Length: 392
Image (cartoon, rainbow, N blue to C red; front, side, top):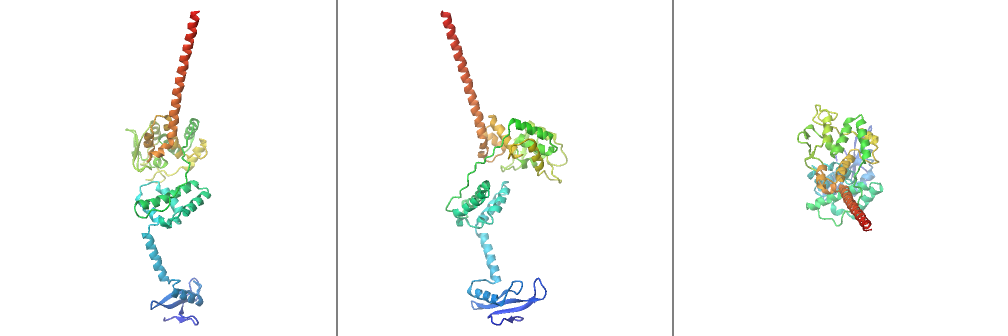
């Protein structure tokens, strides 16, 4: 204990003088000495000013160490390290989610899902292991989001929670949980549409807008049903003018896809001057593509008098699909390929439009038959009248 002075009246408490932290002069640094398992242990209690340490507090710290109610700084570091290592080997919900993301790195939709998970799960339920979850945990998270007016977000977040748990269960990493994570049902399958009059207004607004780059992006969304990101990333090499196809490299559906290059889309591409960039819509810097046109999209949407809540690009993708479905000439599996939907269930949201067309066609057939029958009855009636007149 060289250089240290014993504090009178406090057994096992010592101090030494040291330069003060964050101030002039010196301060006392208190240490305690005690026996543990037959060995003498020295531990730092704290600084006089920096830690607001006093002989009495140092003595209490020593008593807690002896009785096992506290730990030395070294013991705390060892415990924290052990806890961290244990967490790394424990299949918490966070660990399962991270493992899921790593094994689905090619899933483009994960970017938005990761943001939701980090915001609403990571620091809360994510720290638990699945077997520690109880229904009340899930209810609290759901109610918290729903009371904040985030009903859709509540469903999305709980789906991520359930997906993480199911991923671990299916791979034998964790045992099944004792309850089912229920996802709130939503009635929000948006199939935005525009009337013929609204489409006319849109075409006029596109032609008159000062930003023809943004206008062309919207035209392609309307004429091809492509997603915004797919249009932004289009390269000239992706467009086969001779064969009449557009190649989309790794679209949201998960693999490269080809869609027909129709006459309307061809006209849009032919109106764009090809510069030095490989991209159809170059970005601000060499070698980059366009990433945003929010202001121009909003301006065009306003000029076209879009319905409230209509999304300028994704909404036009819905219009494209709705027009094809309501034509009655496009089967659902064909529409699925055109829309590059991974799941036919996503495409089936437009089935009611095709069904209505079929109903209208069936109704038309019935009307034609009724008219034909009525015409025959009228002829028969006239024939009877003529026969009666002849008999007189």
